[in-house]
Image 1 (cartoon, helix red, strand yellow):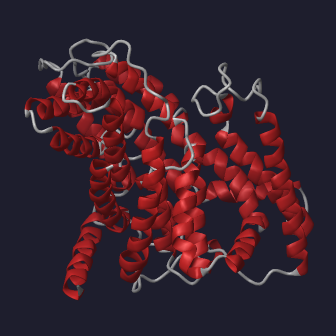
Image 2 (image 1 turned 180 degrees about the vertical axis):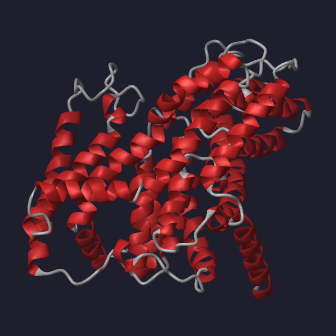
Image 3 (image 1 turned 120 degrees about the vertical axis):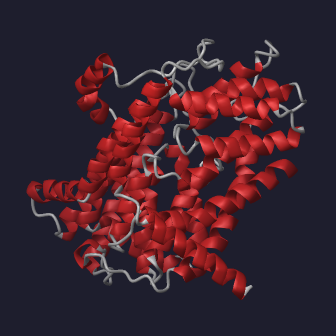
Length: 493
């Protein structure tokens, strides 16, 4: 066991060392952008037989190095950046969270929580919260992951282990959740359309994978708990926390004034949540979709998650600051927002190049070509059904390294695999579940995922030299174990 552990540790150290020699993430996105341009020019005149299931037309690679394409790129560069979805999610959320943090509200709340949470249950509690955060779309990336580092650090544990555990729950276990979320009906819509190619009368429940995803939550928590406490944290024992002390939260004992401020601010937050529930409760609530649903992507409440996070943190944050005395005037509140934006400057730079790369990759059609050709190769192998399921999981994981959007990948792969496996006697529900396993388990090891650089930034708050290699070496054990064990669980299930 010791020899095996030493071998694993050396392998992960090697991955970290090699990975950290890679260029800065922003430079990687820039290099990737140039590669996409060159490949699009080289493949633009090549004829492919692959049909795009979304259009029924043959896939054509678009040359991005023509004069018209470059002119279009230059004219849209600003818009590409400003409309990059993760940028708005992160920055707006951080405005509210920054006020709550710099006022002392989050700090005080964590102290109270630590007093009542047994240390041995900290890891599974973090992973559980991370999994449930999927219900609020991308909230876990901007809220749960950084707070996990703060909580671990406050408990005398390594903050990077907390960040890794939360990242595994938020992203590695993206398809596991006790609570239905907007991704369920979105994927179901693609699955049903694909199934109707074979059976026009086929109807699929939007929660067709709910039993599986609910049971999977327990599996992800167990895997994450074991790896965090037995593999990741022991490996970090020699990694010194050398971040700027001014940026690392201090956890002194709460004063009577702090306790009073926390009580009042918490009541304000609970009142806000209660008001939201009261607004959502009526079947004709303006925050529901036209069919009265709350979890659909068209429901205003699902499109308002980020503003709700902003409000539910800035209001108690301001109240706490005024009662505790950390805020004397409106200038202090704006100053807290400014500080939170200052800490995001590195991410903004990376987001700029990431947005340009993702836009070019989509417009070139290289991602669609990669997904469809890979699926057709798997189809022509005519493997046994269970082997094909495993092949779909690994193909999805591979494509996920290049195409980050879960729905976009399924729009490409679903029309190919759902009808194919239906003819082998495999239900569309099982095929969709297999896709979700491959997609989720590989999220945490692709540096091209929009939120991956943000996790690097979170880690750098505590360990300055953190790079892509550091995060990859932390997350690779999670990815491998989650994929292998989750696949076995799916086949048994």
